[in-house]
Image (cartoon, rainbow, N blue to C red; front, side, top):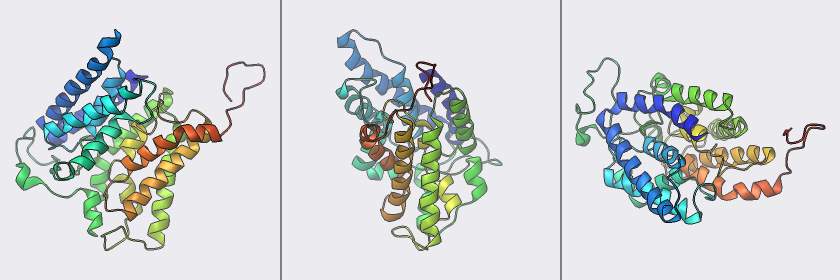
Length: 311
């Protein structure tokens, strides 16, 4: 299962190199180094090997980073995620929070300036490809689509769909993320109920608030629904992190409720808070209630005559 997730991330990682060149490689190398080292420090005294799960955590965390993030900030985040969001709970299978999202939120809150000022313009078709050396961080730092919408500036939908827009390393590859979702669902690696309920819930709340003319905090106009769905890390987090089998509920009814909770909370945070991105917070809240949702909802019924086959 872990390898399939890694396979699905490879095209997205390649696309991030196309957009940001060496910056993507530098961030990814730093994250994998400190992520694996942190896991090794905890598993070595127990006589265990470093699991493949830390590779998934490191890959997801790296692709959620801004392209020009200081490498020391990226290192601190993955150390926190692997050590404090996973191994202090007993290691793989016992953590209640997704380690990648916990690490991302830790550095987002602890170092807001370093995170929010580390976005740069990506490569676009028609431009000379310079492997990330062609622009200066000081002159290229600008606003993501979500930040633009906060200012009442509608983003270009074609850029949002094709992925040639500012954002975290892996979040803008919309087409590749959708293809990865289909692959993970087809191989039964990701739960389609959670993906669908999260996206539909987010969409419903966004459309409802837009229809009644509610503007985000500090914005002069409501978020356009389609642009909001394609901006930020909604698709990336929904496909790869919300579906984490360790931190998500196990019962079908609880999985629907889990997705609805995350999608609704994420949309509300985007609109009513000063944070331009709300999906990370929505997922963390969902992780908190996952076990409780499993308690509230009944288990799936067994088919008559077929022991062990879930309905």
